[in-house]
Amino acid sequence: MADELKSLDDYQKKFVANISHDFRSPLTSIRGYAEAIVDGTIPYEVQNKYLDIILFETERLTKLTTNLLALNSFDQKGAMLDIRSFDVNEVIRKTAATFEGYCTKKRIVLNLEFSAKETYVDADKSKIQQVLYNLLDNAIKFSNTDSKIQIRTEEKGSKVFVSVKDHGIGIPKDSLKKIWERFYKTDTSRGKDKKGTGLGLSITKEIITAHQENINVISTEGVGTEFIFTLPRSD
Image (cartoon, rainbow, N blue to C red):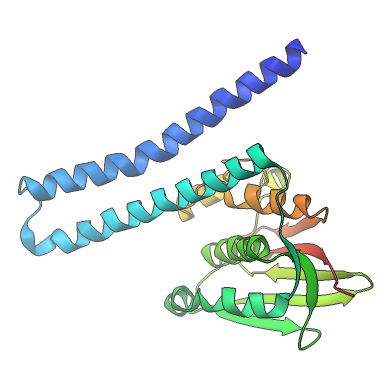
């Protein structure tokens, strides 16, 4: 019990330290640029550039707060799921549509490949939508310009397999087991992913586990990454 309490205490200290760091960075940036605009250090003609940075950092804080609330919900309530039958293909189409502007900017093509016109699963629709959003957000973030991302669904017996595959920078082999940890970021992602919170994959894992399903990752550096998760097929 003493070891368990020490482990919990260490985790809480690390958790608070990570939150403090991830909040401090954007807040420092917002305050610095806002003060420079107010006191005239930044000339009026270039203020829009720094206002865009302030908006960017505000979005980063919003995303961090949303993810922390999602994790807190799992910690406090456990697996509170609203299980219903729905067409996962339709959810994929709608989620993919929200990234249209982002993909156009990076010249990334999203290929949706469904084994059937409709694929019904029994799951919590809003949480699976969050899983898809997190995986697509990651895939686009770490994809190269002028590349493709495939999102597939396939029925196998009583399961539906959903795959999100990119052709981006990939994940280092020694990081594959750590990517599900809260706040974890690979060394390669730190320079490329300025807005990431290190919570998206942790939330994704917890949602799929709450459904008593599995999620796996296959990745090769410089080649790309594929996430595959299962859901129960509706009768």
